[in-house]
Length: 83
Image 1 (tube, rainbow, N blue to C red):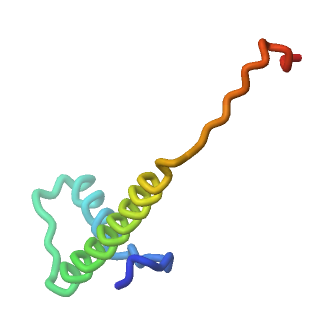
Image 2: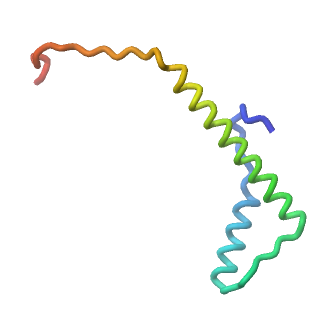
Image 3: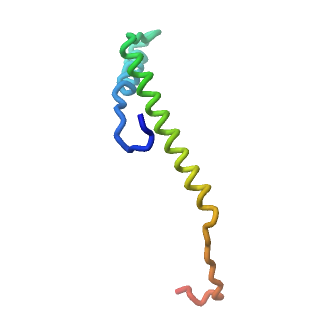
């Protein structure tokens, strides 16, 4: 998976897990069981999401550190520009 693209992520396994947890909580269940296939899908999806977030964070940090030479202009006109 490339973190350079903005392709939508398939978060269905995460949504299914959250729904399963909500359902278990509502029925006061003590545990949740995932078969291996669903556990793999959930783990893979979480990995994709974390990789995307990490890539986005790196882009934000890089763009902030590259803008150290930002010039801010301040004009002192004694308040004559106010209306």
